[in-house]
Length: 154
Image (tube, rainbow, N blue to C red; front, side):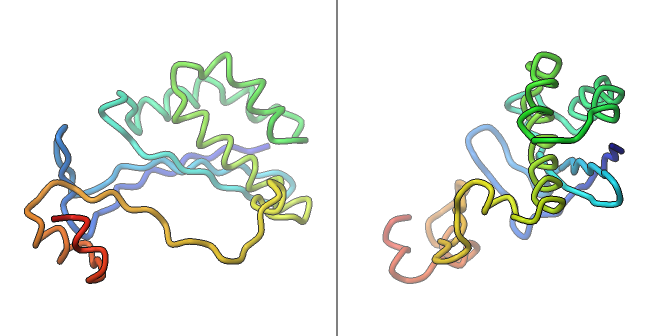
């Protein structure tokens, strides 16, 4: 199996402000696992509060590169189990690898990840969104909330 790491600095549409600080871009690491010409992807975002940066995740994953690339790909949970003792201090890195392994497994074996987990792709709710700190009018305007949801922010 081949491991490739992709670093991204994703600009946010709006500055995100919470009590611990603010960001205008989100550093992210995408893990790519390739096996027999098939590729699976997993992502983890940096989070300074938890002391996980793109550098620290890349370094942690790099320390396991040989173990990852020599893994005889089977079930995703086997890869997680083999890496967990080595990445216990960097759960963000382990999560990105786990996501990539599940994506790859679904691509190779037919059912997609959500199907493997017994889910269906119907009646999917809108994704959640964390609303940053600001004055209510700006929070409503910049987050595109509908009139009915605006009262929850005031």
